[in-house]
Image 1 (cartoon, rainbow, N blue to C red):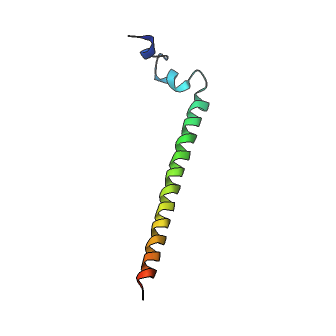
Image 2 (image 1 turned 90 degrees about the horizontal axis):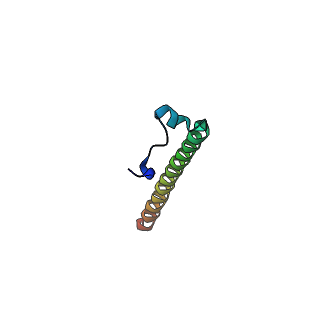
Image 3 (image 1 turned 180 degrees about the vertical axis):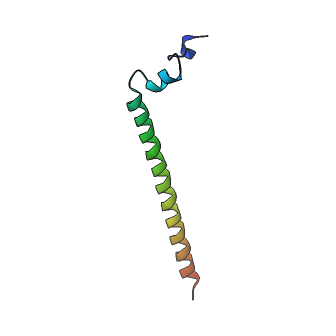
Length: 64
């Protein structure tokens, strides 16, 4: 097997510790996941608001 696929850590606790930088690494990963989830939530909310506005505008056009 090539060196590319060689594991750099001896076990899972060592992987999670990331050479004593695990708090910063996993904290950064968590921050990105939270930011992406928040962006997804905001986009869905905005899309629903636009869809409601379009439906209201269509209803006003059809009303006599």
